[in-house]
Image 1 (cartoon, rainbow, N blue to C red):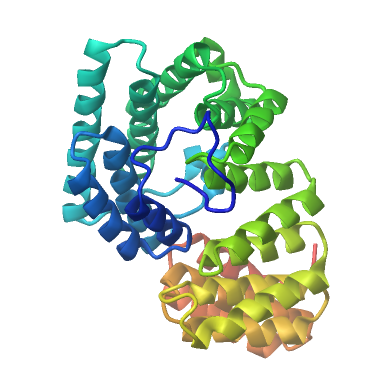
Image 2: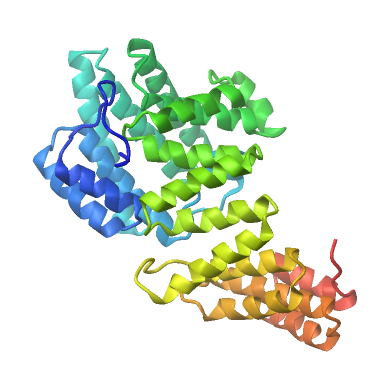
Length: 384
């Protein structure tokens, strides 16, 4: 989707270019998905035969479903985590709508390509649809081979766009992202890719993603998100933090941007800044900035940062607060209870630690957390 903070240029192709679509993009990147979908619906009504308008609505609906299930995580597309992610349940009505819009877009693109096989806009739009379908098949249906075929189709479409129109910077996003992702895969996953037409190359991939981020087109914001994650993955933390901070400043209602900025601080070892970032985000929980956001996850991340910083009492207090936040799922609460037990052990309060471990076992007897808790009943937790 289009970012508002860069001007359109001659090589940018966003169809339709209208107020409704621009407003929808702003809502989308502020994670106000219902409003984004509303404006995308109206834009599609005004442009019923435009696959770009179909794709905008398709992306908004699919992303809303990912967010509802806590599965909105751009890191899924930047390495092997994509292959090990949990299946995402989707509302049946949304599932039917996603499939309908996917087919509608593909049919519109096919109609245009029959008339002109070198229609770069139709090729680009079909590539976008195929990329969304690949993500859907992988995350929702867990149909890996079908997802791979769709992803390769997307890559081929956008490669052809760049062959026909090298200045079509939006097409560099999918090409660059897939090129980087394959180049980042560990063995044995990467060995499988030798039979694929996509050559993994982290340097070339990140360069293309950066060009998409700087292009001012509809993939500019997505490119900036992906580039920030790539920079963090490559341990260029200052640049990643700066980029994510800029995104958060542009879209102040985006909970993911705010939380990820704190994550980058924590991962880079800048623990005081991470702690301050998470605390500031939790301070906003009482307002209207992030309705429905998963603040329990932020509290857990804050506990982890405090633990790393050596503040075991502070971490214990924060872990204990996780269950009190709305949208704190069972697994997260269990992890927080287990972590609280570990903090009690580090503080020398063994009896309290044992109670926490027993609580985890009672709540999730067959979970990995319960297995760890049983081990900790035998031997007190010690920092690695």
